[in-house]
Amino acid sequence: MDSKMKEIHMQVLTGDIMRNDECIIRFLNNEGRVLQSFQRDRDGWFQTSSRGIVRRCTAEQTLSHLLPPLAGASRAIVKVERIEKQGGCLRDTGL
Image 1: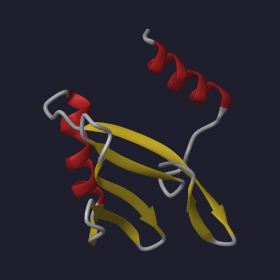
Image 2: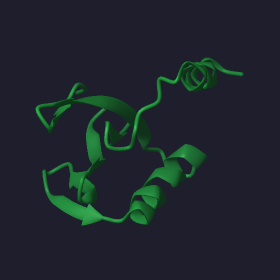
Image 3: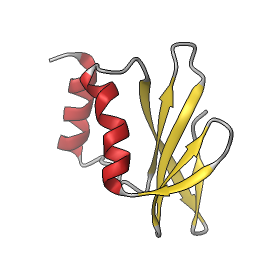
Image 4: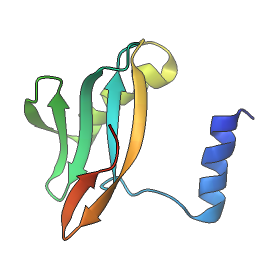
């Protein structure tokens, strides 16, 4: 088991799991530039482009963007980061 899988396995065992409204999924290019991101709020999923354009999307659309890089069919890098809720608002703790 590689180190990333061990980390995920430990999170499952310790109960340190993120809910899908507590994270942001970023797609990066090889230089680390954000290509797009996906996030969930109380109204559902939304995508933010690299130019800041926000579009609502379904869970299925989010998954269809997520699966190719995870399967190695895309060169995009997927990074999932926890965001904290402060006063009912989400705060990005990442990039």
